Amino acid sequence: MILAVPVLWRTRERFPLTLLLYALIALHAVVLMVGGAYSCARVPLGFDIAQWFDLHRNPYD
Image (cartoon, rainbow, N blue to C red; front, side):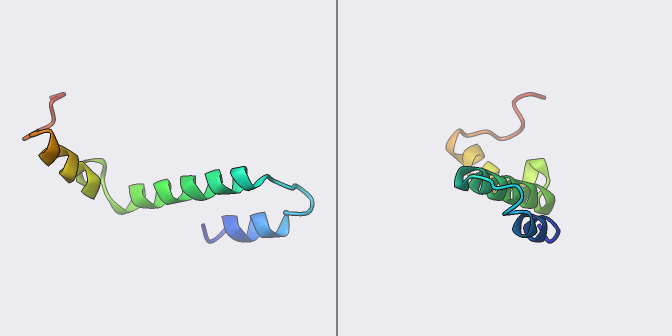
């Protein structure tokens, strides 16, 4: 994110991108940051889903 934003800002006139593409790049960056902060098994939304569906353990084990 620290490198991508300045690169996108400096190349905005030479390589114009649509607003949709900028939104998708931002969404992808958020997904990568959440993935870096939590492991796959410890994402907070995962705990809520496990409670909603009464999953006590990984059903794929």
